[in-house]
Length: 413
Image (cartoon, rainbow, N blue to C red; front, side, top):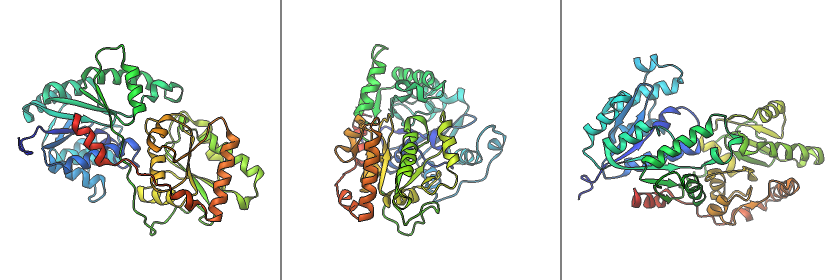
């Protein structure tokens, strides 16, 4: 069989369309990495996305056009009539959905999805969904019966089921329903870590047949050094700073870091105080932390800086004294892996997934031992002042690559 005659692969890019114009999350970046990989394949590839009105199907040319827009090589086009009439979506998403229609080779209303797939695929098209989005029963059954091939779904974590106290009230039930649909329709469940695989199996056992599971660690992209990047003006570059990266939500445990900075401010002279740089958008169910952040005002030691682009964020992290990650649960945890890949010291909770991905690179500290967290932060600050942190930065961490990820994925899906 020639590569041109190989069974086509079909990637769901719904999340990238829905979140157009927003700072990418870790899951967004995974879907984007898959889009990059798919357009580089020599075998037939297609993409599908849900819009406000239905579904759009893209061929390789359309996928390249979408990637050019997502990576800012080309701007989004003008809003069309349908986007103008759509309710409750952002201006950026209106433009993205308009371009989605312009780039498509076929479109349909939701009821026509099965028929559209049957028209364009004669069977054996492999469907990939890597973003927890668009996993409705209609989509999954249409992909199996209409596209006629295998269904592969990536599960990033089961945190909504394991830590419901950190979720919106409706999230655990919705997540469980999604997981049951995946269990019913998927042939392969791709897991970003062995921890996620164990969690998926635990939640699926006893509820019917299990799809195959396969662990494929996510690739960690390391941006090249770019001294020309201007750091945010809030950061005093004459003093060391520590970063924490991610949505400001309860399980990320920003409250612990704010407590530590308040304690240090009471006991250290200002000249010895490090800065805390919080990089991430505000999330949900975290009003106490939001109020504390609002109260920092002109605090010269704590800076909340959301919305950084990837290059700026990489430089903020690269030039920092360390990454702090007191999260209580993660399915993978890209920020600590990215920090380690940059040679930045990492202090984090002793989660099993960090041991799996990072080995002995981080400084693992119990979340119950606030004194030890404070002591190690002060110690890294002193090392930074003394210019000794370069010794820690020499620890060789070889991060997982996307090449290795896709070699695993394409052997099973």
